Image (cartoon, rainbow, N blue to C red):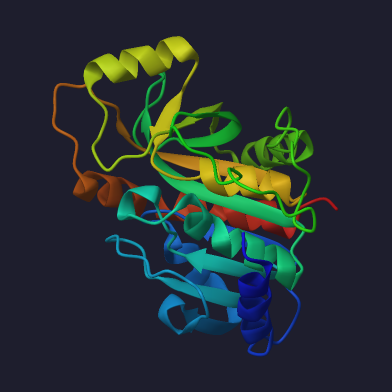
Length: 273
């Protein structure tokens, strides 16, 4: 990872901001609405930022939004980059490096995911307890820059247990029922076959998507505290007798918008140090 590019991007962004962000947010398909709730926002389109790729996926606005949310200084990616868009793992995870350089110490990652666990329903929110990297690649491949993190980062508790417990307590306080489970990261852009879903269930996966894992690996390398939340936007292939579409993903996330907003805002408002 090019440290010069990270510093150039963060310097440009820092000059636009009104404060130092403490929490980073990555908002997945249909979930970018949370960034609209940020007060005194500074909006920075990716296309204007040094070394940033551009988001090409429907449902991703493609901009950074920084400001105050529930009393905390935050910086949000309203739309992310994906490996399947043709970007390298280093490009996909570049914004995490930049947010770290800007001063965040916590990262909340959200996504829309297909439900593998048959006990789940579309519209459920799932706190990620762990992940399986099924992408066949890793953003840390290649020479290691010791200024960014150690060569062999520990992944045994990359999703912070304190944050998992906190999120579960917030859901209980709000009277919301949420799931906890393991997220599987695949490359996409195809949805999985029924046979692949059976395999992933055997592996221990509860939900599957095309993002999150690279960003969380880099967050772990950078020493960030991570919370992950999936919106179960559909049941994965072979569970229900129906085709899978991106429109369905967006439609489901629209339906759970208010629950998602209440949940994440409460998490941020009361996030422990």
